[in-house]
Length: 222
Image (cartoon, rainbow, N blue to C red; front, side):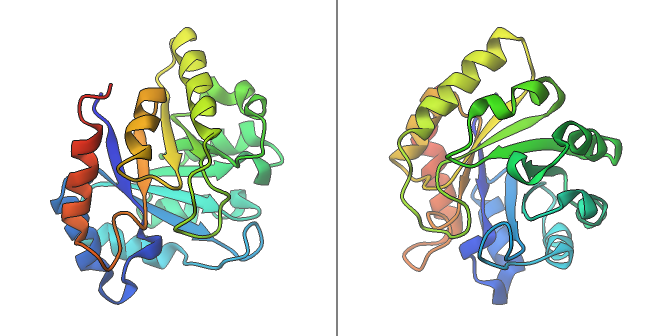
């Protein structure tokens, strides 16, 4: 499996969102990552299903939804109906993570589970065989442009060993601080999917060129 680049629209120009996501796909992005924040689970408020719906109309790639919200169970169907292909929920926000993961799959989407940097990996071990993706947060969730937390690499390596030992078909996604330096290191540690926000969407260079640069940087590191 080649490494998937998943640009996050968190730092994109919302005034020209359709063009921004199309530019990323033109550069080779296989996923578009949408960070949904409710102002409660994290301090920031971003957007809801209507923005997911708009992105779905603009591009025909996998929409990777990151629910940084309290009570995610109440919102699963809304984001799947809007066009979400993968729903990632935080283990810290789910009282019954096994049930939540099962409901995502029952509704027809792939299920991902996310962990904050301070959450022990053991928290997801019981559902590792029930999910399609594990998202390792390499920053504390809430804002784009944060510095990569080095300890995240050990967490990715542990997950890679555990997934391979159990013969599971589970992707490892890294979210936060991904750039030309940290991206290849994440892949070497075992990551399959790289979320990149401010690296892709910034005022220095275009999204398509930035996606191409990141894909070139990680090529051959597996």
